Length: 250
Image (cartoon, rainbow, N blue to C red):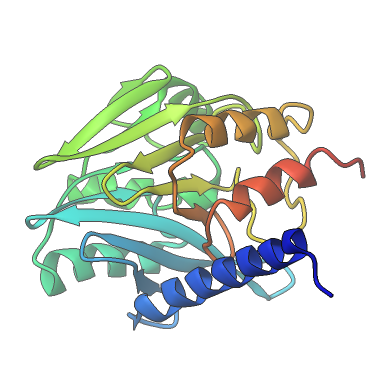
């Protein structure tokens, strides 16, 4: 005979699985080219996925985010190669008839900032923390147009976007972007997709990683969708997985 507590756990698992499947069914995939894919989550929210080409010849998918309303949009991270960056700009301007208000860099790595030169040529404003801007200069990327210390709130019409540094993790400058109306977090490479490995630790603070993500989870307990820098999006389980992953030793 199954105990009530066991039944409750099974019910919760079924609910999580159902909600995950429901999100996947509701999302819409738009294939722009072999270099760029758009996943539409809602009328306002899109994931852009492009590819980093490794020395081995293989390619590695990389996520960014788009938040749009009333023909205006903010983009979060550039696609990971120049062709995809141009394709994203053209898709937003020509296909969606959207004006790009700015691009926010999650951190200084090339999978976030590779298209910075193109954005400058196109006259699209760039936004980053002072830490990110300083680290970008060491990689010979152009300095962003708008700098903030640890927090900046952006607006599109009556919608708010919160961009905040919570602590070191994947890098010393990584931030998250939170969208209250959608209950979405774009976490960049600080957040891992389920079953992902630890990945690139060259600039990481592995001792603080779990603590930083725990702060994010405590600050936004209502979040429903979490988008990692690489791999599939999901729910709060991505925060829990990342916290657990960096509490374990190599």
